[in-house]
Amino acid sequence: MRAARLRPWRYRMGQHLHDPTTLLARARSMLNAYAHARMMLTQGTRLGCVDETTSIQAREAVMAPDPPLANAPMRQSPCDHRRGARQWMTGWSVADGPVMGFGTERTRVADFQHVVTTVLLPEAIRRQVQMVVLIVENGSTHTPTQVAAWVQSQTWLVAVQNLWLPPHAAWLDQRAIWWKVLPRTPPTPNHVAGVEAL
Image (cartoon, rainbow, N blue to C red; front, side, top):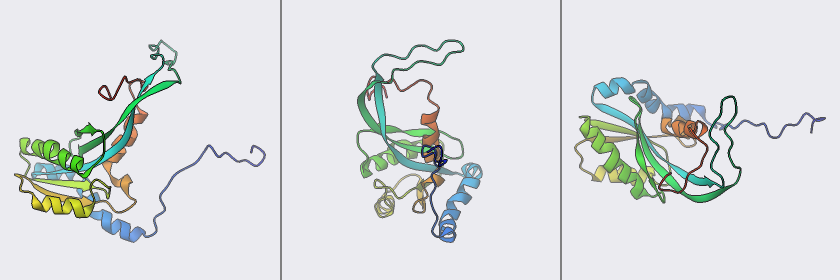
């Protein structure tokens, strides 16, 4: 491999856009909402991203990590016991940053509805917001047909509007970006006794 100058361990991932014009046309409304999220909040509209992150593992190291020492890396056992996993259904407020949600054993439409009705909308009412705009991707727990029909059938104290991400554009979801960064900056190695601690 050295003679052929091959390095298969180095790679870049990227999504090929078959039709950038259509993608931009569909993404324009949410990009505009991102750009004006703070102004929207001052006018009574809260912009949020809602999605699930699946299979967050609770792993308990065979030996607890050694405490960090000056000028030395923390030492972590390479062997661990799997103690289960949780799915995280969360919403992220774009203008001011809070992340709200809960862990579930599975990901279902009912979990998406639950995070909207028991976490996001009560917080919007508490903050005296008149409208909540949700940026949502086309996931199995929140397909456009299911969620649109469900939202229309509800009567809430707050108006709810959905903006759907274009297909293959989860990278436009700021909540997903937050969840990608979070595991890369853990305060300690993954040493969790169980899903309750997770």
